[in-house]
Image 1 (cartoon, rainbow, N blue to C red):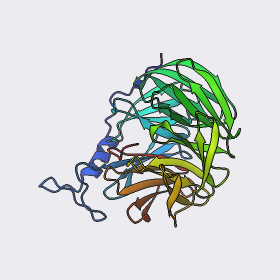
Image 2: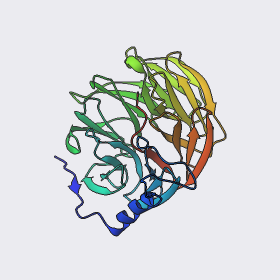
Image 3: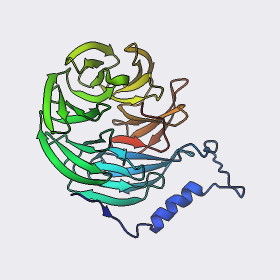
Amino acid sequence: MYKFIKIRGFRTIATSALLALLLANQTASGQTTSPVASATPANQPKLAVILNSGSASVSLIDMNTREVVKTIPVGKEPHHLMMTPDQKSLLIANAAGNDVVLMNPTTGELTGKIPNIIDPYQIGYSPNHKWFIANGNRLDRVDIYAADSANLKLAKTVKLGKTPSHIAFTSDSKIAFITLQDSSELAAIDLETQNVLWVMPTGKVPAGLWMTPGDQYLLIGITGEDYVQVIDWKARKEVKRIPTGKGAHNFRPLGDKKHVFVSNRIASTISLINMQTLEKVGDITGLPAGPDDMEITPDGKTMWVTFRFSKKVGVIDIPTMKLVTVIPVGKSPHGVFFTPRAGWE
């Protein structure tokens, strides 16, 4: 059983300074003001967490002023992150550090660590929260854990092809799908037995995965080419290719159960796909190099994007599909998170 190590007495002067920075502009009436942006409503996120994969750190950004207020070392190669099922802790997976760090998602305070999670490049909970998967990108393995929130018990290590990358699940939590980047394959794993059900070929360097509503199709970002591959996973066959841009990589749904964004790393664009018609309906252009992970504010109006090749984070106005701000961060920024956020549907 892997249980997280609680970090006690972590409320240091540095943490207090961070909170002071976030609250420094409060007026006597309790309303916040900012020389850069208008006050953040109570139901909008206030702190953005950015993983700097190449700097072994996390940048914390005040979303009101859009300035980095603190940079925290967290471990080697933090690539991806996600909330625990109880919505209390943010998990930061350190691929080269072989551990997962826990963070308070609203204050940026580090609260614990789950040791001996080997090579956790990409992580994910099944929809029923029963299973936790860690993809070992450099070790060509997938570790499946029985999960009780942040308490994890290794059920099985599954050896697959080269470079396991992203994860998607069926809504009934019976099957996990894994892209294998350097084998150009998609694998399906039965979660109850932890056995590989099948492996099928894909386009070159498959990465991001997204399941369309009703578990109808799997969308795969084909990073080695310039399209999103549409897979009928029940029949194990390709049904369509949606041209988006070179380096089609990762997905973030708009939250309307109809549209999903895909970042095109090499083209430095972000495309919007209609999941009902399986057509591209728009592009966001004029972006810094290497758009990657994306997150959307709960009002659906603003998208934050990490730019892996530019050491920047961008803020995009969704109604106009325009980049409005860039914020310098650390090397090779990857994961981005804030709460509350738009629904992942």
